[in-house]
Length: 146
Image 1 (spheres, rainbow, N blue to C red):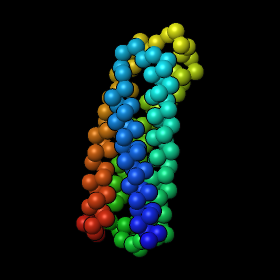
Image 2 (cartoon, rainbow, N blue to C red):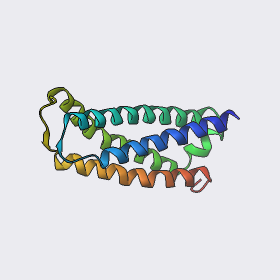
Image 3 (tube, helix red, strand yellow):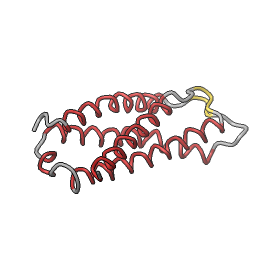
C-alpha cells in the first residue's frame, strides 16, 4: 500500500513538473510584462516544488520501498533516465534564474523587450527531454534493460 502511495506521488509530481515546463515554454516571448513575469516566476517555483517531491519519492522508491534497489541499480536504462533527469534540471536552471533575476529589476511600467533566444531554446529542449524521460521510466519499471 505504501509503495502504491509513493508511486502515485512520484507520478503526480512528475506530471506537475512537466506541466510547469510546458507552461513556461509557451509563455509570452515579446514584451514580457511585470504581471507575466510574476506568473512565470510563480510557475517556476511550483515546478521546483514538484521536482523536489518527484526526486524524494523516486529516491524512496529506489532505495526503501517496492522493488529491491538492485532491480534499478543494475539497469542501464535506469542510469540513462537519471542522466536525462539531471540534464532536464540543468536545462531548467538557467531560464529560471534569468526570470528570477528579472523579477527584481522589472517595475510595473517596464517590459522585458525580448527574451534571449538561448532561454527560449533551453525551454524547448527541456520540453523535448521531458517527453522522452517517462518512456524510459516506463521501460525500467517493466524490467526492460535489466
